[in-house]
Amino acid sequence: MLDKDYKFLSINKTAADILGMSPQEMIDKSLFEIFPENTAAQFSRNIKNVIDTGQSLLIEEKMVVQDREFDNSTSLSPIKDDKGGVIAVTGIVRDVTDRKQLEEEHQRAAKLESVGTLAGGGALLPIRRQDSPHVSFTHP
Image (cartoon, helix red, strand yellow):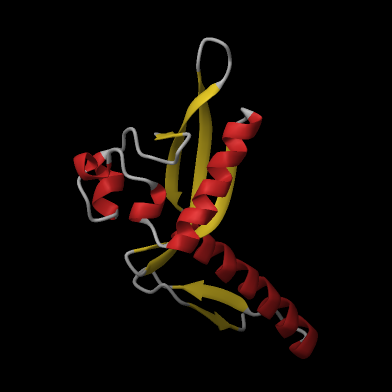
């Protein structure tokens, strides 16, 4: 949970561990003290949108944490006071990198299958082994 100044009010242990810190170390620190400038700016724009509109927001975007880039799905929700004013924003961030990679593989396989059909009159069938992240293709 972050306040209107983009400072952490609370954070769970799992999220703090991913960032290489303890939850206690992160409390009262700004996004800009924890993340690289461009990542913090990106997050703060999304949080500002929730603060300004009072509406929840679901975003899928790339994120870099400790030199590792991954795709994430972030759900941001406003916390409001008795008068309906936004006083903080909660966020849930999910790593969806594996899902995105599978979607991209599926799209590539579909394209290759259509090319194979056009070129040879027969379809290429995608084969994915359990022990490999790669897809290979064969004629039936």
